Length: 74
Image 1: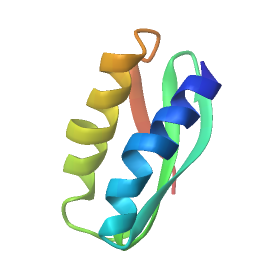
Image 2: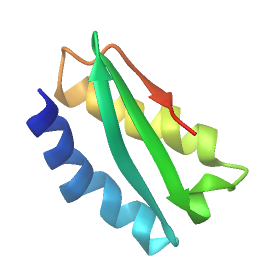
Image 3: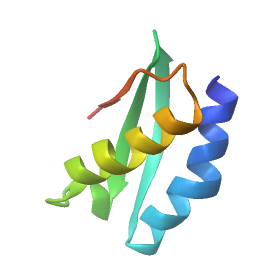
Image 4: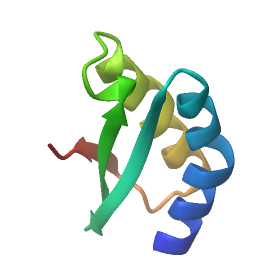
C-alpha cells in the first residue's frame, strides 16, 4: 500500500503542489491513516487544510480503498 500511495503522490499530487511552490512528504502509514508533511509554500498557506483533506485525502481514498484518512505531521 505504501508503494501505491507514494506513486500517486509523486505522479499526481506533488506536481500540482510544486507548481504553487509547495511540496508534500509521505511520513508513514498506520492502520490506514496516511501521515504526510506539507512543506514549502504549502506549510503556511491558509488553504493547506482544504488542499490536504479535499484534495490529497480524497484522491488517495478514491484510488486506494485501504486508506481511511490522512493526518498532517508537523
